[in-house]
Image (cartoon, rainbow, N blue to C red; front, side, top):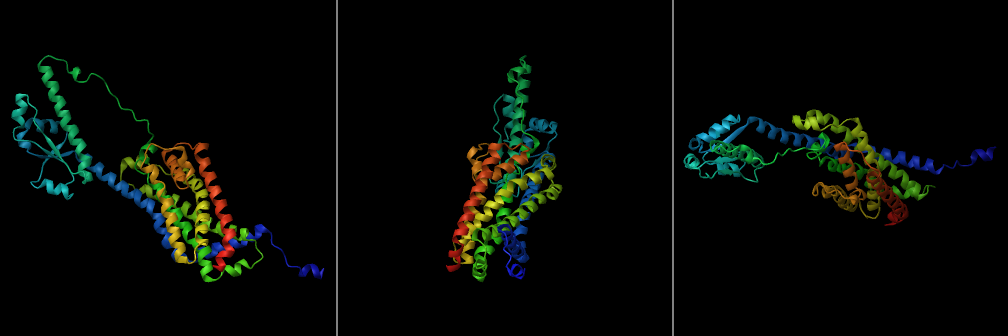
Length: 400
């Protein structure tokens, strides 16, 4: 009986993993200041960008509601003035230095330039040459140019119709076909054209969330000299790595959940009425984002640990991790630079696949097995490969 009581209790492999996991999680959360400096900007990045997009769209909407046309030489075209005012547009005289103001973005409206001979040429049946002056580097003025061009073209069609009516010709000949535009996109899909960069910021937040914990549990522990005593415990290396990785992945998952939740209050601050009507982010979207990001958290945590375990110093680990973060965070740019051309291989690329899945959630479209399956398989394979790599090289890292 006494001999049984003195026998040391052997902990199961699962129990060893749990002990290491709790220890690593406490270590990761202990340095709250560093964790906060990395996580808070990452969490606020997406909502802040959403509000900036909303503010920009709101400015365009308020500009459209003003229905104002800036014109130089309006006294030379009373006929055109009459047409513009009948369309409920007000006319504003252009400043003398309008070109300089357009170049410096001080003037945010395109300028319609009317020649002195406009009315005489129109009476003779000639084609008066009008000019819409804008600056393509001035986004607001460039966006308003289409409205002015459409207004002048409508004036031209009205003049042509009046001329045909005076000659007894039916005006229907000006429109030989009827054309109706029908948009098949859902409100969510239309909103995703404006919010298409949000998933990229969410992925960056997850990267920052995993970064600190991954580097601290590998390279940081080696520099502090606590990794070697940890390896002296009767715990298999793979179990040790599993515990560390679980803590890193959990921290990343926590950041992913907080990032997804942050869009719910952010949508209440949208200034644009149209974007507010199209962008809907509720509990279903939060759950969808979380499920999509969990495998990515696991894969990125394992990948960053594998990168850090091969470095000699914590500073070298940070430099190597930055390269990984740059590559992963930029993969969504492939789809952003190629809109509408989604290829099946996108879902096999870590980062890019999750970006595409989150875009489907924002559009309100269902995810197919051929879409979420590759992303899940790739994340699982990358996680397993990286964890095996870290377990095999942990002993070398201590002696390095």
